[in-house]
Each structure stands twice: as C-alpha cells, then as structure tokens.
Image 1 (tube, one colour):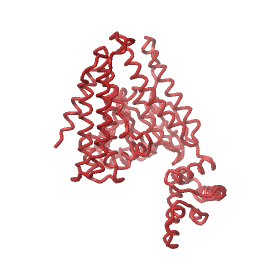
Image 2: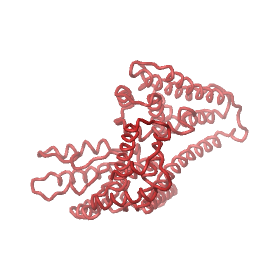
Image 3: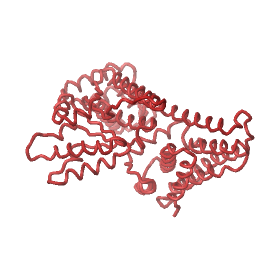
Image 4: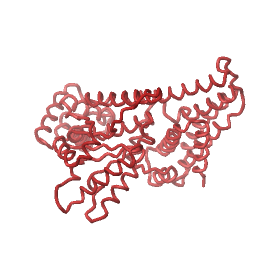
Length: 449
C-alpha cells in the first residue's frame, strides 16, 4: 500500500521550512483534485473511490460535494491534468531563488512530483482495477510535471535576480500574485451569478474592508474590532448556500480562515430531544466547522418558545463556542426576514454578534428565465427562440401556483427536471433518438409545471 500520508507530511514540512505554510491547503486541494479527476475519467465515482479519497486525505466529501468543488475543471480547456500544479511551480521557483538561481537538482520540487504520482496511483488502483486510459492519463500528467522540473533545473541564473534578497522579494511577489489571481477568479464567479446585485456589492464591500484592515495592521495602525458573523435573509432558492460557500473560499484566500470549508446544519443537526445531549451536538458540529464557516439554515427554528424545548440550550452553547473560537470560526445564520428578526431579538448575545446583514431578493421573471436557460445550456439542451415567451409564461404560472412557497432558483431546477423527463418520455414514445431530438426541448415538453 502506498503511504501517501508520509509523503504529504514530508511535502507539508518542505512548505513550512520554505516559509510557504499558507500554500499547504492549496497543495492538498491540488492533490485531491488530481485524484478525483483520475477517478472520473470513466465519468463515474464509485464507493471505493470516494472512500479512498476521504480516508487518505481525511476529508468528508460526498459525491455531490466533490463534483461541485472539482468537476467543472474536467470541462475546461486547461484541465488541471494538462498543466503543472501551481504548488510545484512555486516550490521550484523558491528552491532556485534560495540558491541564487544556479542550475542543479530541485530536490524539493521532485518530492512534490512523487506525491502527485503516488496520489494518481492510489486513484487508479483503489477499486481493484488499473485501466489503460487511467495509467496513460497519469503518465502524461507526470511527464508534463517532470519535464517542467527538469527544464527548471537547467536554467542559468538571471543576472537581475542574482541578489538573494531580491530573489526572495520576487518570490513573495509571485506568491502574492498567485493569491490575487485566485481572489479575482472567485470574485468573478460571484459576479457571474444571475441577479443578486446587492449581494455582490456586499461581498465586494467585505473583501475591500478585510484587505484594508490587513494593510492597516501591517502598517501598525489600530484595527477596528468588527464581528465577521453574518445574517442572510431571503426566501428559499435565492443562492444563500452558494454565496456562503463562496465566502468561505474567498476568506481562505484572504487568510481570514484557515480552510474555508462550509458546514451546513439546521435545528435537527443541533438540538436533541433529551436533556444534556444538545450541547454535545452543537460542540460536534462547531468542531467540524472550525477553520471555516458554519451555516445554520432556518436558524429561527432553534428558538420555539416552548418550555420543554432544548433550542435555547443550543443557542447558549453556540454563543459560548463562537467566543471560544472567534479566531477560527465564522457563523452564518439564514432564513426568512421576519422570523430572523425575532430570532436575533430573543437573545442580546445574538444581536451583538450578528450585526451584518446580507439580503437576498427574489429573482425577477427574466432572471428566472436565465436560470432555466443556464440549466439547459449546461446540460446540452436547447430550445427555439420563439419559446422564450412560452417559458416566461410557465414561470409566471409556477409563481402563482406556489404563492408564498415559491422557491426561486430551486423551483426552476425542479421545473427543468420535469421538462427533460417529459422530453425523454416523448422521444421514447416516438421511437426516435436523433441528435436533434435528444437536445431539443419543445413547447409540449415545457407544459409540465
């Protein structure tokens, strides 16, 4: 059995010794991304592969969580398996800089190549099979990486960067540039989301405040103490969970959070029906969220007002843990506007800790249409332009039919799934299956809200 744990530990130590400890989490993500993409070469993640990823890398990914985090990379022209990992590039650069740019073996960079090769072999062999297309993909990936390291080992010193201090400064700039690129990419993802204009502004405001706060701190100025916990108010299906996840990723890049993971929970995950068990449930979920974000949906259900309810115990325990872990935990509470106000007013400690609101407005009819259109495009479906108004009418019918229970984007996803199911039934009934039939949505398919 390959001891990937020992190799990861060795690489982590290398990053620590190079003064690159903040790169460790990104290195781990790159390793997991490689493993996942290799297991997905057959477009399927089986139980053995999921178990292997979680056990070797001490993660708790679900199949959906892995797909959400890494699958899009499979679709990109510059897929991760077709390029040198950023960590290998940074380590090779730092190693060369530390010795003044002189040619020679880059032993540290080669250790990272070993780690990626071991991870790839684990991915290939975890379900008992070694398919040729998997080994070919890993061989090609390793060739790209090793050739990069070999070329770096041959490079002659750059006269401009011969001074060690200048080299170190140049490396710091490159490392910061890498983080800036990641931050810019994450903000671009947020800005590309449909609707949510006020939410996008709030995210940019938070980022700007944190960056200036960090700059002031580096210059020795006093830093205003502000709570980082957030209140999300809005109806279901307006993107609250997605934005919470993006904030975790952004805060990780900014150095506010160590890992930036999002742990979702609700009343059922925090409140027990028996005395003495609620505190333990809250402590457990908070421990999982440390270093990242704890997202509590419908948080107002924690406080029911009943005398025999343990929701208040959950709130009291949470407030204490938020204070104990104020440097490595951010809590986001979410729900409908009015119930959230009652929830925050139920305890002075809640109101003082949650003073930043982000309001998620309902999507407009046109935004809901764009969401439906996006579902179609991402899943290789298309419809004629003249169906635009037909789709808008069906969306309006959905809103009227559901009333206060209309779940915005979530409702449109459900509608899309009904549409493609009806399309599939139509094609089977007609005994057709041409390319055009398979990708086309008709007016009859749309009539299913």
